[in-house]
Length: 474
Image (cartoon, rainbow, N blue to C red):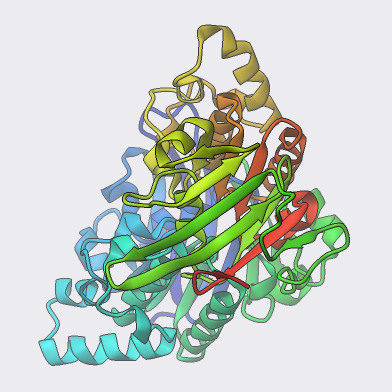
């Protein structure tokens, strides 16, 4: 096997209908068995590099491409994408975008079936991948009833089952809790020890400190600097923040109470928002079991818990978005059912692509608003650092930029209850800080709930923590 796993030579790329290049004269050589981290601010070109390696560019994402990409000596542009899949396994930031099946077990096996492997070999590979990922409890489940983190685990298992030579992962931890990240880290270590090549585009850096051989720092579609792993992970937080990057220091204890952050643990009669009969089941699976709970008004409350704990179900019920939910919310003595809660609340979903409908960013933010709100919309876009994209199509933006568009829509809506499901998923340090500042600034006008695994966000803006495990307040 070649000692060079992949090579990108003098590549420039502009997406179809894009105004400018997203990659400019990129040269990168990746050795067999190497673990390489791609880092940089949102929109720097990391995801586009991963799409070059797995063949999505040019076979799926069209545009103006110059230069050449090869994987084990094969030209990506000249190789059918179905032939690339057996060599390059991919895990995307949004796992739903790579799903083809409706149940988990079939989804894990799908890639192997597509490769035409014998049935006995497929069963063997699926069993091995499930054991590696420790996800036996997720087998034979509906994809649509999984949490974001659980979907990410299924996506990783599907890639592992194909046993490719190169794994390309784009923000694989964006929806994972601390324990799941540790599991993924152990899986990557197994892959690396078996000689696999790993390329990771990531904002959450700390978990990669003992894995990466080399770090590629990108900015404005170019490789600005390369580091060996030890040198990069010895950089202090101030230096990393100045580069627009997250900290490399341990952030594992965010379930613990922090100075100035209060835990929401039981019903408080003096609370202005009280919840009653918050119980919900998916068929026979009980997802939520909360008889009563008080939430502080005009605060920023982090909703924490492990993947599948019931966090997303809880906030969907709170916003009146869960069909068949019968619980009640009492605010300032007034009782609200699901229909009424939909009128006073706004939720930014974990999968932000489901909330983007308009032709331009400004039109997206203005949906449902009066024309007189345009000036305020532009102010919000500027504060979020995306005003320059106001005339771009939302779907042409990076994952982090799309998230900020959805956040801008929520802020302009002026609802009394705003709920954000993983709002910093895919955001760099600058985007995370901007989001934290905005969430803090609006808590005087409304109540904010944030479903998150992001300890840096919690420390910067949250006043309370609501911890959910197994559908209950812990």
